[in-house]
Image (cartoon, rainbow, N blue to C red):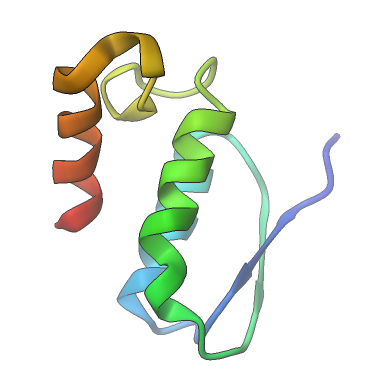
Length: 80
């Protein structure tokens, strides 16, 4: 079993929740480390989507081969 992914930020932050949801969708365990880095969540989601393209739903996976339409769908999901 893989080590949990550390998510940095306040546990009640919507940004941390966004990253945690993305990781859980990809089947990864998480560990939250309390720091104020919540503005990095969108970049983290993009990284997770690119890193774990073989896991979870295909729509939010952000596969580069899906082209502009696929990436736009990911951006829309991340920005909500």
